[in-house]
Image 1 (tube, helix red, strand yellow):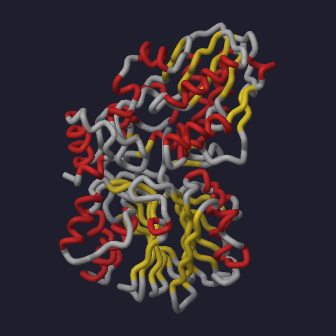
Image 2 (tube, helix red, strand yellow):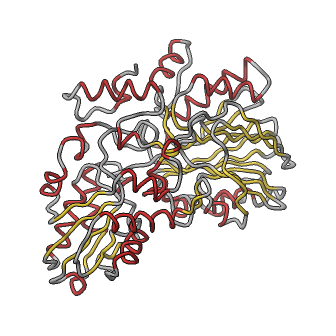
Image 3 (cartoon, one colour):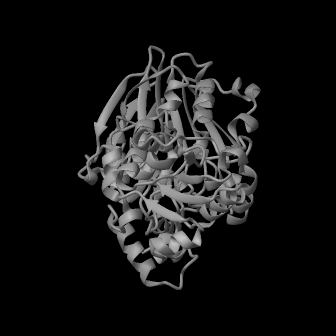
Length: 480
């Protein structure tokens, strides 16, 4: 199963009494990006206040507590762990008492050279309180700000030291709101404004829920600074040479009603389905999407083929997304209570079962068997993403080659393992065509084994050569 690290939200409101509510609503709309913990930090004009919560936003953050968070600037975060544990000590945001009369920060992404930076800090006498890479980013920014008073120079220093994905929001005790995105633009990050607000978020839906219009993406390598009056300064700190937007955001992670890099996610997923239908032929009776991500793709297949779509699998709305559950045992158990088949829709039918991806194969096998046990006479599995053959180091917990079913098996072998009658993967060319961005602007390292950054490539090559390390995470290798 897939796991994704986090969603960020933050900004400025001219009405200090509503800032925390804007963040609260923004985090709820980003809940799909992380369910382990959340956090809110507000600058009240004198002090930075920070509060962290365990679990879902709506269940763990008391509305009464929001009334105590008053200030014109704030940031928030929802988390799932890729680096670090799932406990509260690793929850974001993180705060330093220096410089700028305090600094608080949260990010979405993953640092490739996390272990090297952490080691460097430990050797320099700095002791970190968590295993979360956001704390490393915070300390790097703090160190850079002690060298220079200029925020642009400090963020440039950070970008030159840090490799990986980081869409970041931060506040200082000097009335500064800061937002910046890594030079490759791996993870989504957008900006919106209204008369009364300036907001930043991982996805545009977090702006829309607050009635704020999307203005633009935060560009790769860009720094945006605002004061409490909403005056915006945009700095091209380290201009992007080669964008590397994560293709998985379009395929799976982001909400279908989000706009990423001027592309509507829903429209992309419909095109993914249409392009599957152009690549493969079928005489199936009905198309069944695995809810919820695959619904637009199933619609696209139906438009192209004329085969009807039906809801053959019903999702329990009161269970976490299985891809971000902390353990494989929990994810396996969750599948059994997450999905229930409608036998009258499936019985004696030739099914096209549409899903977004296959990572380890265990969940796909369970779903295929569930559909067959409900009476389906034939189950063809159509996957909107090409085979995943290599780990991700930029924010998805696809950790090793040994765990990836497509890295170790042919398509006919995978077909047999998951008990499908036929397995049809998306092609890379059709994936790129569906997204509608230039191939060179997408990160597809997990599909190709070719990484946009040098340390990631070296780690992947080393991991691939050490086949005995089938279960070890790359950050446990001690860095390179």
